[in-house]
Figure 1: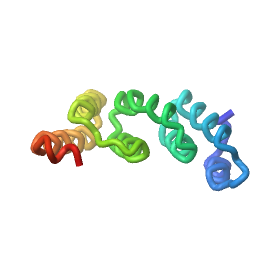
Figure 2: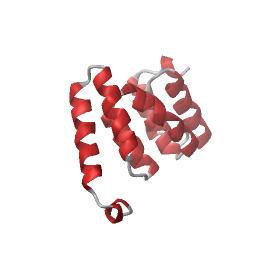
Figure 3: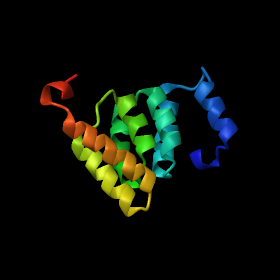
Figure 4: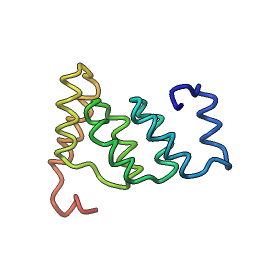
Amino acid sequence: MAKKLDCLKRRNLLNSRTVSTEERIGYGREFMEDGLFSDALDFLGQADDREGLNALLPKIIAEGDVFLFTRLKKLLGQPATPQEWAALAEQAGRLGKATFAAQAERHLAEAGSESPADQDT
């Protein structure tokens, strides 16, 4: 069902006041299953589906996508861990996503230079 939605229908669903939280979760999870992670983030984030958002984390890391990863962590309200940045950098490099790999490595270096007290804030 979700795959058959064009961009205008998706936009209208996201902006509709008549679409229930359960429907948003359903669309978000279908998009996730279909590998459409950006759309899944939109719907799951709007529904505040923490379980669905957490299920996206390993999938997005496996994609090596820094943009989606930072969006996801923001939606979850969680800082990225050095281990996540390292995994993301490695996977992005493996997939030939040099820009994402470099961005993840930069974030990893920044995370490694913070003192433990700084990481709690």
